[in-house]
Length: 331
Image (cartoon, rainbow, N blue to C red; front, top):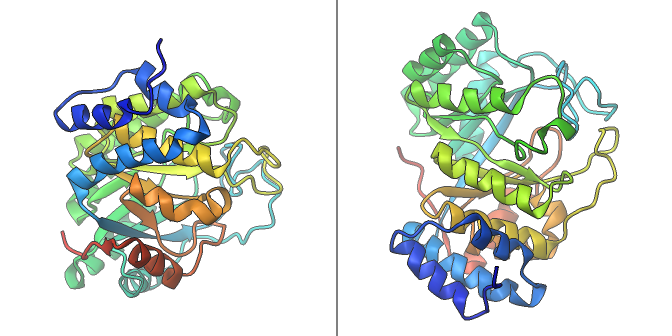
């Protein structure tokens, strides 16, 4: 394959706006481009991002409604049974605490409130608990509600959808070929099935990746292509925060330039989708995280599940400094 020259990135972006879908080879060229091409690639990604989203940034806030105590062996996760990370562990928050979290989301200017719980899959009782909280939140706010509760069956998916859950998150995390290196207690297909189940119940599918888990360039592209095939509406791009005590402790495969190329590649492959700079952006993009918003149009504001994010005021300032604006909270 002839490597794309600098002058080609803009043309490729314009072709994508015109309806062209890039190939795996073209996506791979983005990831493998030299660091001196990052600005040209990012500019081309911004052309696509601006066409579909202008200069608006969507803010999302996570509440960790159940921490730790998970029987799965996902190597990246501090809440896993195989993790020795010194995290806070607790059972389900009360309905009132979940509802209070929605008000905190509004204070942080987030339009999407993400209700997350550790574990393989929710029980009937746990689904009912979430449903009751969601119904109360929807009565008094215009927040979009996203849930991430593990694997879903059709009955549970239907209950969440009918309660007013707009979006369901279940990340693929990595490519099919790399999945067995990350987790052994469930399969890649299990994750794909849950994305399809959420879609079938009428919820907007949210699914993304965690980059930096030893995947090859080809595997990074493959997960982006699979997300395109699944037609996911929202794509969180996480960058491994290799937490001490987890099996992936100490792994350092990323630098800010690679993160920017990965974000750009995801935008080229999924041009009209919400691309989110997610977990690990502060650690891996560091002083260059503001540049990620030229490709991404969404971020988490505040803390993540068991790791700290930067202060909401810093995120608001970052957006203002770019000349961008926070998208208003509305359905």
